[in-house]
Image (tube, rainbow, N blue to C red; front, side):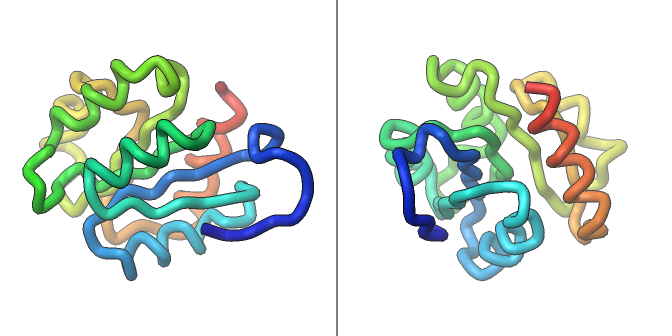
Length: 133
């Protein structure tokens, strides 16, 4: 988590990156860090649920393939959470966009970003989703 001194975190923009590889999650978070005041990294469904209970999350960037087997349905579970009804959920995956994008959208995702991604395109997409909330 990136620390920031000041008032309560509810006044700030909070990012949650969900990725089973912590190093990759750090890279993703660092690519968009300028758009957020805080970021959190979850490497499992359990950690994700803990962050969602504890903090107001403004955006989730997620690679929905975890070792704990949550897969695509985890997106659906997140979307049913009352705290996340309007939170943009962007999928980040190596799967070809033309083959899986619609599938992810059917589970409740708001966007799709394919690895490897262009940092400037990622920033622009995240910024658009944040402003459209």
